[in-house]
Length: 441
Image 1: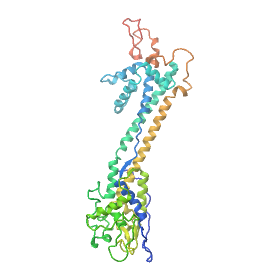
Image 2: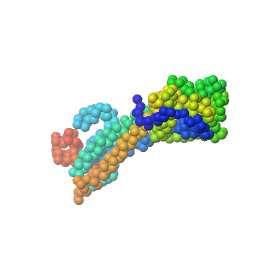
Image 3: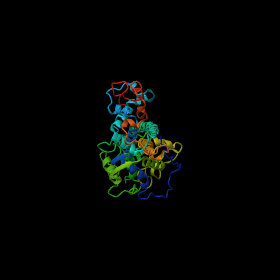
Image 4: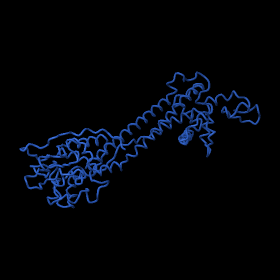
């Protein structure tokens, strides 16, 4: 089920009949047509939706590169030249990630190790973080901090990825499908034009007053295209008065008449499509979809037996000044205004607004994750400048000139082990000589 975004309540008007002396002016349906025209422009144009095009990879990778640069040399070497298969026991038990993220973490480590493969790369990364003149003790403190930051960054990235994948369900194809359902009455625009019954034409037994009065099952007007003709065609199919002039306020050239036959439906609709703007490029937002849908909902008026959209005067919507140019349905009444939300042309619009609202919420969440990750990167690369415990050494060997193995506490302490029995893999030292007491470590 799509997220249900709260739409404004339908406006209730119990009695609609205009005073007998009132005559609908030319353009009487202009305001009713405006939101319908908006949806026609969506259907006849190229619709896009906003997406989070920015990547979080750069910030995330930078954090992992600094993390790897502060790690001991053997750990970097391991991931810079990873074996084809890495036994689980090679990863310290306390650092073993959950099964579902192990593969992703290892890929991250391999990538980070490649960016910290040499002493020069390590020192460059440390310098970016203000750690190039830090002591070994200070580097230990920085190492502990960057590990926590890297763990937080990984969690944020996982959340960002999950949210982004969830948001892919609101594809532009599905958005367009909802628009087509509303405007054309089906998922795609029929080649011959809007999906309306052939009866939407003369003679008067199948004319305007008959077709624009829709039963509770919505079997007649099933699309905004058909609804627009009910409101905008300049015609009077009952010969009981003068037709309302240019009902929707269009130009004379784009003023439709009531279709004379089934093939004429598309011809008359196309006049309105051109007026609304065929071929426009539109970035559709939740705000616009909700506003448009709410405007339509609040344009409905009701009496005890029907709901009406457009200018209603009396009896039937035949296009005349005496009766009005409108659409009516028994699917909703003053006692049941919510019934209009189930009309076959309006329900897809309500669903569209809900889909776009959910899409917008997901975008807001991913943007929050991206900002949080950028903050973590800024914190990581200011470790040497903001921490009171990390100050430049007054003398001695700096971290910048040290070999990669000397940037970690374990590697830095290898000089305390003086034989091949005390300098072992368990304490991250390496004994390079064949003798027991003389060698490099």
